[in-house]
Length: 82
Ligand SMILES: [Zn+2]
Image (cartoon, rainbow, N blue to C red; front, side):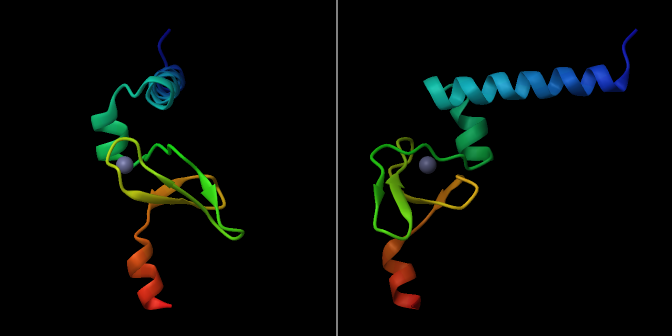
């Protein structure tokens, strides 16, 4: 019997597998990077306060938040505001 619960579980499993393929091999970049803005770090550096990196897909500066999500970050603009 196919229930909504099983359909949602299946969708979640597919999503997790695809996200693992993205983080490990760069598959589905158009969906995860361009669509969901999941940036992938290359060289990571830590300035004593925040963790920074460069996205390997778009080459832009990214910063890690407390939930270890990467988001776009332009250091020159941020410094100008502070
Ligand atoms: Zn990126």
